[in-house]
Image (cartoon, rainbow, N blue to C red; front, side):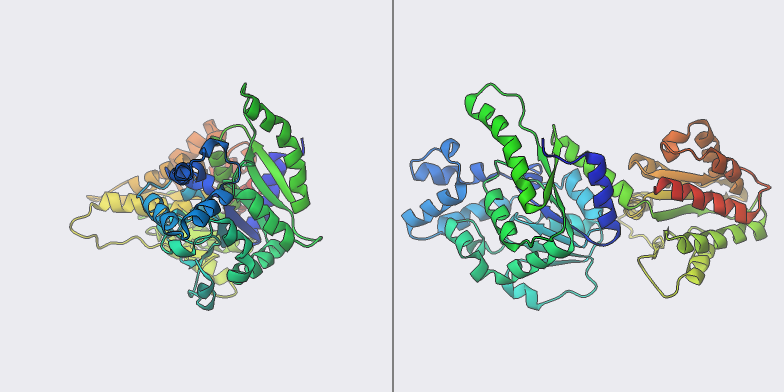
Length: 469
Protein backbone atom coordinates (compact mmCIF):
# COMPACT_ATOMS: atom_id res chain seq x y z
CA UNK A 1 0.00 0.00 0.00
CA UNK A 2 1.34 3.45 -0.96
CA UNK A 3 1.91 4.81 2.54
CA UNK A 4 4.83 6.45 4.32
CA UNK A 5 6.41 4.96 7.42
CA UNK A 6 5.40 6.84 10.54
CA UNK A 7 8.99 7.18 11.74
CA UNK A 8 10.00 8.85 8.49
CA UNK A 9 7.02 11.19 8.64
CA UNK A 10 7.77 12.18 12.24
CA UNK A 11 11.41 12.89 11.39
CA UNK A 12 10.69 14.94 8.26
CA UNK A 13 7.75 16.92 9.63
CA UNK A 14 9.61 17.65 12.87
CA UNK A 15 12.46 19.04 10.79
CA UNK A 16 10.00 21.32 8.99
CA UNK A 17 8.54 22.46 12.32
CA UNK A 18 11.96 23.36 13.67
CA UNK A 19 12.92 25.20 10.49
CA UNK A 20 9.72 27.26 10.53
CA UNK A 21 8.67 25.62 7.26
CA UNK A 22 5.67 23.61 8.48
CA UNK A 23 1.95 24.26 8.02
CA UNK A 24 -1.22 22.49 9.11
CA UNK A 25 -4.41 21.91 7.14
CA UNK A 26 -7.22 21.05 9.55
CA UNK A 27 -10.41 19.34 8.41
CA UNK A 28 -13.80 18.51 9.88
CA UNK A 29 -12.64 15.44 11.79
CA UNK A 30 -10.82 17.56 14.36
CA UNK A 31 -13.97 19.54 15.17
CA UNK A 32 -16.22 16.50 15.05
CA UNK A 33 -14.25 14.96 17.91
CA UNK A 34 -15.18 18.01 20.01
CA UNK A 35 -18.89 17.36 19.51
CA UNK A 36 -19.75 19.32 16.38
CA UNK A 37 -21.76 17.60 13.65
CA UNK A 38 -20.29 16.23 10.45
CA UNK A 39 -21.57 17.18 7.00
CA UNK A 40 -24.15 14.39 6.93
CA UNK A 41 -25.76 15.47 10.19
CA UNK A 42 -25.47 19.12 9.18
CA UNK A 43 -27.43 18.55 5.96
CA UNK A 44 -29.75 15.76 7.14
CA UNK A 45 -32.72 18.10 7.52
CA UNK A 46 -31.95 19.72 4.17
CA UNK A 47 -32.02 16.31 2.47
CA UNK A 48 -35.34 15.43 4.08
CA UNK A 49 -36.88 18.67 2.83
CA UNK A 50 -35.84 17.61 -0.69
CA UNK A 51 -37.26 14.11 -0.05
CA UNK A 52 -33.78 12.63 -0.44
CA UNK A 53 -31.87 10.21 1.79
CA UNK A 54 -28.72 11.61 3.36
CA UNK A 55 -27.30 8.06 3.57
CA UNK A 56 -27.47 7.64 -0.19
CA UNK A 57 -25.91 10.99 -1.07
CA UNK A 58 -22.21 10.89 -1.98
CA UNK A 59 -21.82 14.53 -3.08
CA UNK A 60 -23.07 16.64 -0.18
CA UNK A 61 -21.81 19.84 -1.78
CA UNK A 62 -24.20 19.16 -4.66
CA UNK A 63 -26.96 18.43 -2.12
CA UNK A 64 -26.50 21.90 -0.60
CA UNK A 65 -26.76 23.32 -4.13
CA UNK A 66 -29.97 21.39 -4.78
CA UNK A 67 -31.46 23.01 -1.70
CA UNK A 68 -30.55 26.52 -2.86
CA UNK A 69 -31.87 25.77 -6.36
CA UNK A 70 -35.18 24.57 -4.92
CA UNK A 71 -35.57 27.37 -2.41
CA UNK A 72 -34.16 30.20 -4.49
CA UNK A 73 -32.12 31.41 -1.50
CA UNK A 74 -29.63 30.12 1.08
CA UNK A 75 -31.18 31.54 4.25
CA UNK A 76 -31.98 28.06 5.57
CA UNK A 77 -28.37 26.94 5.06
CA UNK A 78 -27.15 30.05 6.86
CA UNK A 79 -29.40 29.31 9.81
CA UNK A 80 -28.17 25.70 9.96
CA UNK A 81 -24.58 26.97 10.23
CA UNK A 82 -25.52 29.37 13.00
CA UNK A 83 -27.53 26.79 14.95
CA UNK A 84 -24.96 24.00 14.74
CA UNK A 85 -21.62 25.76 15.03
CA UNK A 86 -22.35 28.39 17.64
CA UNK A 87 -23.01 25.68 20.20
CA UNK A 88 -20.51 25.73 23.08
CA UNK A 89 -18.27 22.66 23.08
CA UNK A 90 -15.08 21.78 24.95
CA UNK A 91 -11.66 21.91 23.34
CA UNK A 92 -10.19 18.47 22.72
CA UNK A 93 -6.68 17.28 23.53
CA UNK A 94 -5.96 17.49 19.80
CA UNK A 95 -6.87 21.19 19.69
CA UNK A 96 -4.59 21.84 22.65
CA UNK A 97 -1.72 19.88 21.09
CA UNK A 98 -2.12 21.71 17.78
CA UNK A 99 -2.00 25.02 19.66
CA UNK A 100 1.35 24.18 21.25
CA UNK A 101 3.06 23.06 18.04
CA UNK A 102 5.63 25.58 16.74
CA UNK A 103 3.64 26.19 13.55
CA UNK A 104 2.93 29.66 12.19
CA UNK A 105 0.45 28.81 9.44
CA UNK A 106 -2.84 26.90 9.80
CA UNK A 107 -5.38 26.43 7.03
CA UNK A 108 -8.84 25.03 7.74
CA UNK A 109 -12.09 24.28 5.98
CA UNK A 110 -13.92 24.33 9.34
CA UNK A 111 -16.46 27.03 10.12
CA UNK A 112 -16.12 26.91 13.94
CA UNK A 113 -13.67 28.90 16.09
CA UNK A 114 -12.15 26.06 18.14
CA UNK A 115 -8.68 26.54 16.66
CA UNK A 116 -8.71 30.23 17.53
CA UNK A 117 -9.83 29.47 21.08
CA UNK A 118 -7.15 26.81 21.56
CA UNK A 119 -4.41 29.10 20.25
CA UNK A 120 -5.63 31.91 22.50
CA UNK A 121 -5.60 29.59 25.51
CA UNK A 122 -1.97 28.77 24.64
CA UNK A 123 -1.17 32.50 24.86
CA UNK A 124 -0.53 32.83 21.12
CA UNK A 125 -1.35 35.95 19.12
CA UNK A 126 -3.60 34.89 16.25
CA UNK A 127 -4.36 36.64 12.97
CA UNK A 128 -7.52 35.16 11.42
CA UNK A 129 -8.33 35.50 7.72
CA UNK A 130 -12.04 34.83 7.26
CA UNK A 131 -12.67 36.73 4.02
CA UNK A 132 -10.79 38.56 1.30
CA UNK A 133 -10.97 41.92 3.09
CA UNK A 134 -8.96 40.50 6.01
CA UNK A 135 -5.83 40.26 3.86
CA UNK A 136 -5.52 44.05 3.90
CA UNK A 137 -5.21 43.96 7.71
CA UNK A 138 -2.29 42.44 9.60
CA UNK A 139 -2.09 41.94 13.34
CA UNK A 140 1.29 42.98 14.70
CA UNK A 141 3.59 40.43 16.32
CA UNK A 142 1.44 37.52 15.21
CA UNK A 143 2.40 34.01 16.32
CA UNK A 144 0.00 32.13 14.05
CA UNK A 145 -2.09 33.00 11.01
CA UNK A 146 -5.29 30.97 10.59
CA UNK A 147 -6.79 30.93 7.10
CA UNK A 148 -10.47 29.97 7.19
CA UNK A 149 -10.71 29.28 3.49
CA UNK A 150 -14.38 28.28 3.59
CA UNK A 151 -15.49 31.08 5.88
CA UNK A 152 -16.77 31.32 9.41
CA UNK A 153 -20.01 30.87 11.33
CA UNK A 154 -19.84 34.57 12.20
CA UNK A 155 -20.41 35.26 8.47
CA UNK A 156 -22.75 32.43 7.40
CA UNK A 157 -23.91 34.14 4.19
CA UNK A 158 -20.30 34.08 2.92
CA UNK A 159 -19.50 30.48 3.91
CA UNK A 160 -18.41 28.16 1.11
CA UNK A 161 -20.88 25.29 1.17
CA UNK A 162 -22.74 24.94 -2.15
CA UNK A 163 -21.49 23.71 -5.51
CA UNK A 164 -21.69 27.22 -6.92
CA UNK A 165 -19.53 28.47 -4.02
CA UNK A 166 -16.83 25.99 -5.01
CA UNK A 167 -17.13 26.76 -8.72
CA UNK A 168 -16.76 30.51 -8.18
CA UNK A 169 -14.18 30.19 -5.40
CA UNK A 170 -11.15 31.45 -7.31
CA UNK A 171 -13.03 34.55 -8.45
CA UNK A 172 -14.66 35.45 -5.13
CA UNK A 173 -11.88 34.39 -2.75
CA UNK A 174 -8.85 34.90 -4.98
CA UNK A 175 -6.59 36.06 -2.12
CA UNK A 176 -7.01 32.69 -0.39
CA UNK A 177 -6.03 30.92 -3.61
CA UNK A 178 -2.91 33.07 -4.01
CA UNK A 179 -1.88 32.61 -0.37
CA UNK A 180 -2.48 28.85 -0.44
CA UNK A 181 -0.42 28.46 -3.61
CA UNK A 182 2.48 30.26 -1.96
CA UNK A 183 2.27 28.18 1.21
CA UNK A 184 2.06 24.89 -0.71
CA UNK A 185 5.25 25.85 -2.53
CA UNK A 186 7.15 27.05 0.56
CA UNK A 187 5.91 24.87 3.43
CA UNK A 188 5.44 21.21 4.28
CA UNK A 189 1.76 20.62 5.06
CA UNK A 190 0.20 18.08 7.39
CA UNK A 191 -3.44 17.43 6.47
CA UNK A 192 -5.33 16.43 9.60
CA UNK A 193 -8.98 15.58 10.20
CA UNK A 194 -9.81 14.41 6.69
CA UNK A 195 -11.04 11.04 5.46
CA UNK A 196 -11.16 9.65 1.97
CA UNK A 197 -14.98 9.72 2.17
CA UNK A 198 -14.99 13.39 3.27
CA UNK A 199 -17.38 15.31 0.94
CA UNK A 200 -15.02 18.27 1.05
CA UNK A 201 -11.82 16.46 0.28
CA UNK A 202 -12.10 15.95 -3.48
CA UNK A 203 -12.99 19.59 -4.04
CA UNK A 204 -10.06 20.55 -1.84
CA UNK A 205 -7.60 18.21 -3.54
CA UNK A 206 -8.76 19.43 -6.93
CA UNK A 207 -7.84 22.96 -5.89
CA UNK A 208 -4.51 21.81 -4.46
CA UNK A 209 -3.73 19.96 -7.70
CA UNK A 210 -4.37 23.08 -9.78
CA UNK A 211 -2.12 25.16 -7.52
CA UNK A 212 0.81 22.74 -7.27
CA UNK A 213 3.80 22.95 -9.54
CA UNK A 214 5.78 19.89 -10.62
CA UNK A 215 8.59 20.79 -8.19
CA UNK A 216 6.34 21.42 -5.18
CA UNK A 217 7.20 20.32 -1.63
CA UNK A 218 6.18 16.99 -0.16
CA UNK A 219 3.15 17.01 2.15
CA UNK A 220 1.62 14.49 4.57
CA UNK A 221 -1.93 13.40 5.42
CA UNK A 222 -3.05 11.29 8.40
CA UNK A 223 -5.80 8.88 7.33
CA UNK A 224 -7.69 6.07 9.03
CA UNK A 225 -7.73 2.73 7.28
CA UNK A 226 -11.21 1.37 6.54
CA UNK A 227 -12.07 -1.18 9.22
CA UNK A 228 -13.06 -4.79 8.60
CA UNK A 229 -16.70 -4.76 7.55
CA UNK A 230 -19.38 -7.06 6.25
CA UNK A 231 -21.68 -4.57 4.52
CA UNK A 232 -21.07 -4.73 0.77
CA UNK A 233 -20.82 -0.97 0.22
CA UNK A 234 -18.25 -0.60 3.01
CA UNK A 235 -16.30 -3.61 1.79
CA UNK A 236 -16.10 -1.80 -1.55
CA UNK A 237 -14.43 1.12 0.26
CA UNK A 238 -11.71 -1.27 1.41
CA UNK A 239 -11.03 -2.30 -2.17
CA UNK A 240 -11.04 1.27 -3.44
CA UNK A 241 -8.93 2.73 -0.62
CA UNK A 242 -5.46 1.57 -1.84
CA UNK A 243 -6.13 3.05 -5.28
CA UNK A 244 -7.14 6.35 -3.71
CA UNK A 245 -3.94 6.36 -1.65
CA UNK A 246 -1.82 5.93 -4.77
CA UNK A 247 -3.66 8.81 -6.38
CA UNK A 248 -2.68 11.08 -3.48
CA UNK A 249 0.89 10.98 -4.77
CA UNK A 250 -0.23 13.11 -7.73
CA UNK A 251 -0.71 15.87 -5.19
CA UNK A 252 2.66 15.19 -3.52
CA UNK A 253 0.74 14.07 -0.43
CA UNK A 254 2.18 11.09 1.46
CA UNK A 255 -0.44 9.17 3.50
CA UNK A 256 0.29 8.24 7.12
CA UNK A 257 -2.14 5.48 8.06
CA UNK A 258 -3.73 4.84 11.44
CA UNK A 259 -6.15 2.19 12.69
CA UNK A 260 -7.90 4.29 15.36
CA UNK A 261 -8.59 8.02 15.57
CA UNK A 262 -7.00 8.05 19.03
CA UNK A 263 -3.66 7.64 17.25
CA UNK A 264 -3.98 11.24 16.02
CA UNK A 265 -3.50 12.39 19.60
CA UNK A 266 -0.42 10.16 19.91
CA UNK A 267 1.04 11.60 16.70
CA UNK A 268 0.44 15.20 17.77
CA UNK A 269 1.94 14.51 21.20
CA UNK A 270 5.04 12.98 19.63
CA UNK A 271 5.41 15.91 17.21
CA UNK A 272 5.16 18.26 20.20
CA UNK A 273 7.77 16.28 22.11
CA UNK A 274 10.22 16.14 19.21
CA UNK A 275 9.76 19.70 17.99
CA UNK A 276 10.34 21.14 21.47
CA UNK A 277 13.44 19.13 22.38
CA UNK A 278 15.55 22.24 21.84
CA UNK A 279 13.30 24.27 24.16
CA UNK A 280 14.74 23.84 27.65
CA UNK A 281 12.87 24.91 30.79
CA UNK A 282 15.09 25.63 33.80
CA UNK A 283 13.27 24.57 36.97
CA UNK A 284 14.92 25.43 40.25
CA UNK A 285 15.36 27.78 43.16
CA UNK A 286 18.14 28.29 45.68
CA UNK A 287 18.48 30.18 48.93
CA UNK A 288 20.88 27.56 50.23
CA UNK A 289 23.80 27.07 47.78
CA UNK A 290 25.17 23.88 49.33
CA UNK A 291 26.78 21.54 48.45
CA UNK A 292 28.51 23.51 45.66
CA UNK A 293 28.85 26.78 47.54
CA UNK A 294 27.60 30.15 46.31
CA UNK A 295 30.42 30.95 43.88
CA UNK A 296 30.40 27.56 42.10
CA UNK A 297 26.62 27.40 42.09
CA UNK A 298 26.24 30.83 40.50
CA UNK A 299 28.95 30.00 37.96
CA UNK A 300 27.01 26.83 37.09
CA UNK A 301 23.77 28.74 36.44
CA UNK A 302 25.47 31.45 34.38
CA UNK A 303 27.49 29.01 32.26
CA UNK A 304 24.42 26.81 31.79
CA UNK A 305 22.45 29.69 30.25
CA UNK A 306 25.33 30.64 27.96
CA UNK A 307 26.18 27.13 26.73
CA UNK A 308 22.55 26.22 26.02
CA UNK A 309 22.26 29.23 23.73
CA UNK A 310 25.65 28.65 22.08
CA UNK A 311 24.71 25.03 21.30
CA UNK A 312 21.46 25.94 19.58
CA UNK A 313 19.04 25.33 22.45
CA UNK A 314 16.40 27.81 23.63
CA UNK A 315 16.04 28.78 27.28
CA UNK A 316 12.75 29.12 29.14
CA UNK A 317 12.95 30.58 32.63
CA UNK A 318 10.42 31.27 35.34
CA UNK A 319 12.90 33.43 37.28
CA UNK A 320 13.39 30.83 40.03
CA UNK A 321 14.93 32.56 43.04
CA UNK A 322 18.72 32.32 43.07
CA UNK A 323 18.74 30.45 39.73
CA UNK A 324 16.81 32.35 37.07
CA UNK A 325 18.75 35.62 37.20
CA UNK A 326 22.12 33.95 36.63
CA UNK A 327 20.80 31.67 33.85
CA UNK A 328 19.36 34.73 32.12
CA UNK A 329 22.63 36.66 32.43
CA UNK A 330 24.52 33.79 30.78
CA UNK A 331 21.94 33.43 28.01
CA UNK A 332 21.95 37.17 27.29
CA UNK A 333 25.74 37.17 27.09
CA UNK A 334 25.60 34.43 24.42
CA UNK A 335 22.79 35.99 22.38
CA UNK A 336 23.86 38.39 19.61
CA UNK A 337 20.61 40.34 20.07
CA UNK A 338 17.45 40.37 22.14
CA UNK A 339 15.44 37.35 20.94
CA UNK A 340 12.26 36.29 22.73
CA UNK A 341 12.21 32.97 20.86
CA UNK A 342 15.68 31.95 22.06
CA UNK A 343 15.09 33.27 25.59
CA UNK A 344 11.55 33.10 26.98
CA UNK A 345 10.95 34.71 30.36
CA UNK A 346 7.95 33.85 32.53
CA UNK A 347 8.19 35.70 35.86
CA UNK A 348 5.64 34.36 38.33
CA UNK A 349 2.88 36.83 39.29
CA UNK A 350 3.29 37.79 42.93
CA UNK A 351 0.11 39.84 43.36
CA UNK A 352 -2.78 37.38 43.22
CA UNK A 353 -6.43 38.62 43.08
CA UNK A 354 -8.31 38.09 46.32
CA UNK A 355 -10.82 35.77 44.65
CA UNK A 356 -8.07 33.48 43.31
CA UNK A 357 -6.11 30.76 45.07
CA UNK A 358 -2.38 31.34 44.62
CA UNK A 359 -1.71 27.60 44.31
CA UNK A 360 -4.33 27.23 41.57
CA UNK A 361 -3.07 30.24 39.63
CA UNK A 362 0.54 29.14 39.86
CA UNK A 363 -0.33 25.57 38.80
CA UNK A 364 -2.04 26.89 35.68
CA UNK A 365 0.88 29.22 35.04
CA UNK A 366 3.36 26.36 35.32
CA UNK A 367 1.33 24.26 32.88
CA UNK A 368 1.48 27.08 30.34
CA UNK A 369 5.23 27.48 30.75
CA UNK A 370 5.92 23.76 30.44
CA UNK A 371 3.74 23.44 27.32
CA UNK A 372 6.41 25.44 25.46
CA UNK A 373 9.27 23.15 26.53
CA UNK A 374 10.48 19.68 25.62
CA UNK A 375 13.08 19.30 28.35
CA UNK A 376 13.15 20.32 32.01
CA UNK A 377 16.54 20.88 33.65
CA UNK A 378 16.31 20.77 37.45
CA UNK A 379 18.79 22.87 39.43
CA UNK A 380 18.84 22.73 43.25
CA UNK A 381 15.27 23.35 44.42
CA UNK A 382 15.14 24.69 47.96
CA UNK A 383 13.72 27.57 49.98
CA UNK A 384 13.89 28.88 53.53
CA UNK A 385 10.83 28.35 55.75
CA UNK A 386 10.95 29.53 59.38
CA UNK A 387 14.73 29.76 59.18
CA UNK A 388 15.18 26.21 57.89
CA UNK A 389 16.11 24.96 54.41
CA UNK A 390 13.37 22.81 52.89
CA UNK A 391 12.80 21.22 49.49
CA UNK A 392 10.91 23.51 47.09
CA UNK A 393 7.46 22.06 46.46
CA UNK A 394 7.04 24.27 43.38
CA UNK A 395 9.96 22.53 41.67
CA UNK A 396 8.42 19.15 42.47
CA UNK A 397 5.16 20.36 40.94
CA UNK A 398 6.90 21.55 37.77
CA UNK A 399 8.60 18.17 37.38
CA UNK A 400 5.31 16.37 37.94
CA UNK A 401 3.65 18.47 35.20
CA UNK A 402 6.56 17.81 32.83
CA UNK A 403 6.43 14.06 33.39
CA UNK A 404 2.63 14.00 33.01
CA UNK A 405 3.09 15.61 29.60
CA UNK A 406 5.63 12.93 28.63
CA UNK A 407 8.60 15.28 28.48
CA UNK A 408 12.21 14.81 29.52
CA UNK A 409 13.61 15.63 32.97
CA UNK A 410 17.36 16.09 33.48
CA UNK A 411 18.27 16.70 37.15
CA UNK A 412 21.67 18.19 37.96
CA UNK A 413 22.14 16.12 41.11
CA UNK A 414 25.38 17.86 42.13
CA UNK A 415 23.38 21.04 42.82
CA UNK A 416 21.64 19.24 45.70
CA UNK A 417 18.14 19.36 47.23
CA UNK A 418 15.21 18.50 44.87
CA UNK A 419 17.67 17.96 42.00
CA UNK A 420 19.65 15.48 44.12
CA UNK A 421 16.57 13.47 45.03
CA UNK A 422 15.40 13.37 41.42
CA UNK A 423 18.88 12.45 40.21
CA UNK A 424 18.91 9.39 42.49
CA UNK A 425 15.55 8.30 41.08
CA UNK A 426 16.80 8.94 37.55
CA UNK A 427 19.88 6.79 38.17
CA UNK A 428 17.64 3.95 39.35
CA UNK A 429 15.25 4.22 36.37
CA UNK A 430 16.66 6.50 33.65
CA UNK A 431 14.06 5.64 31.00
CA UNK A 432 11.35 7.32 33.11
CA UNK A 433 13.28 10.58 33.02
CA UNK A 434 15.27 10.68 29.75
CA UNK A 435 13.75 7.91 27.63
CA UNK A 436 15.66 5.28 25.70
CA UNK A 437 18.99 7.04 25.28
CA UNK A 438 22.26 5.85 26.74
CA UNK A 439 23.48 8.76 28.86
CA UNK A 440 24.73 6.81 31.87
CA UNK A 441 28.17 8.40 31.70
CA UNK A 442 26.78 11.94 31.60
CA UNK A 443 24.31 11.22 34.42
CA UNK A 444 27.19 10.01 36.58
CA UNK A 445 28.94 13.34 36.05
CA UNK A 446 25.77 15.26 36.96
CA UNK A 447 25.74 13.56 40.34
CA UNK A 448 29.36 14.37 41.17
CA UNK A 449 29.52 17.30 43.62
CA UNK A 450 33.29 17.55 43.05
CA UNK A 451 33.03 17.86 39.25
CA UNK A 452 34.16 21.08 37.60
CA UNK A 453 31.35 23.47 36.70
CA UNK A 454 32.34 23.24 33.02
CA UNK A 455 32.12 19.41 33.20
CA UNK A 456 28.60 19.58 34.67
CA UNK A 457 27.42 21.92 31.94
CA UNK A 458 29.09 19.84 29.23
CA UNK A 459 27.31 16.71 30.53
CA UNK A 460 23.96 18.54 30.27
CA UNK A 461 24.70 19.65 26.68
CA UNK A 462 25.76 16.13 25.66
CA UNK A 463 22.52 14.65 27.07
CA UNK A 464 20.43 17.22 25.21
CA UNK A 465 22.24 16.51 21.96
CA UNK A 466 21.67 12.78 22.43
CA UNK A 467 17.97 13.38 22.96
CA UNK A 468 17.79 15.57 19.86
CA UNK A 469 19.22 13.01 17.45
